[in-house]
Length: 96
Image 1: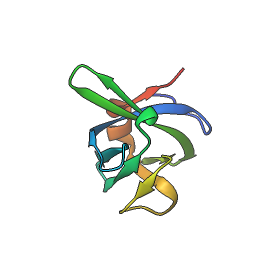
Image 2 (image 1 turned 60 degrees about the vertical axis):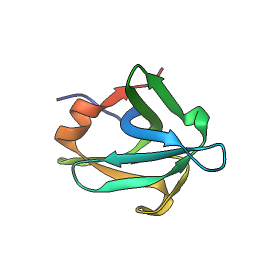
Image 3 (image 1 turned 60 degrees about the horizontal axis):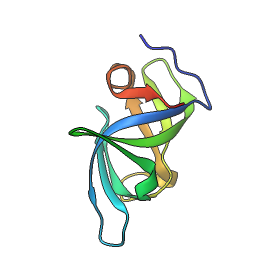
């Protein structure tokens, strides 16, 4: 189990495609919900075929990690996504 902390900057594995206004359309299947919306291109890292969106951990629960992602989302208020702990362990990376 990965050790996370509130305030930690992270990279979240996602799907990302060019959006209609110079931004990126991102989708994250968190294991608990699907989060989709738009973020600034500077918040998406491309590494080979993988895509990551930047976020900040804002809550830690026994079974979930809550992450705030700056952007405009259809499926979550304030850009906060609840990530299943097991999903987070496999799909979050610390951001320097």
